[in-house]
Length: 232
Length: 232
Image (cartoon, rainbow over the protein chains, first blue to last red):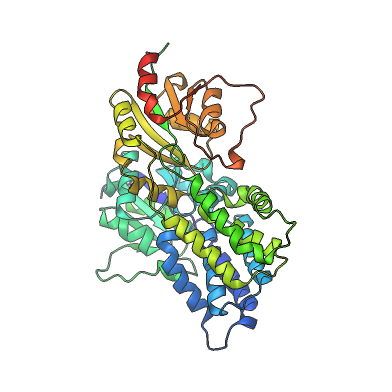
């Protein structure tokens, strides 16, 4: 086995909590909207459909989620939702963006151990401003050789990053919670993936693998240094 | 005079129209809101105040503008704006994001002439997705050595880009429509700026120069190759 040179870390739901913030927003959204929506309407189902439609135009992230919440509120209420509730949705969006980063357990220690043997980079997708703010306030930025905010985590993005880092794909290992974004596109390049699931996964990150990929799954990030060490 | 090595181009309102799209949105916004707002309320003044407040949290770009339009609509109408109007504001935002890029005159020819003598890069700030889409559909991407979407055009950002490109500041010339974002931070590093004004300038880009910077102003981009040639 050729040794790894570079280890990439996803950020949202790999280094810090993210999806639970959206879950909390959705719970509050239901409370705010239910008084204005017929009982047989699946509010969160409609919200997800709006998010899916808006993904190409609005992209990932909290501001897009906020716009989708507002659009869906108008629709599912048949135009009856009061402006004051819309105002609350803007506040919900702002509050989400302002929420402090909450690191997952053992993150700092794990990265410190890994970086003593490998080059390490952070690779996250989504909103440039929000991701940059989270990286800056996480206290982790200085541990990484580079922190990359990308638009989409596909094979061509990973390929460009590896070319810039001067690392062949088979010497790269990506660690993250999303099989779809962190594992499959890297393996398709000939790289390696380590899946560390988070207890929540956004529906639009769900992955149906017709041609199953063989990748490692760890229960927690703290197992990563030992797994890396055992491999060489 | 030491010759330039690298010429940087701003994008919005330097290579393609941008601010006039926001102006059109604001005209439509006034039409939509006026029926629900008292006559003595300065709707666009309130919108600008919201944008200014939201800049740190929401950042630049159309999605942030959309959220600020919605937030302001709730406020200036004292919560009386109907949800259907809010729905129109979401549509306005989506339409703006989907609008095709409209190049300014002579852009393609100018860049082609400049790149035959200098390295050229595009440096734009704002929304990663929207800027990337505009770059991709502009037909200009392949003319540039790199297209950089940055969060803020300040001296530290320009310094990092120059370090990555391996170019000393005094061999760098930045071309753009905003004195505040394209000229002053580059000159503060010891670089050069060429100001090519656009007929509209966003209020939050206005620049009060207490210590006037000496920079070149050209009426149109087509004058740039001759100016560069005359300088050496």
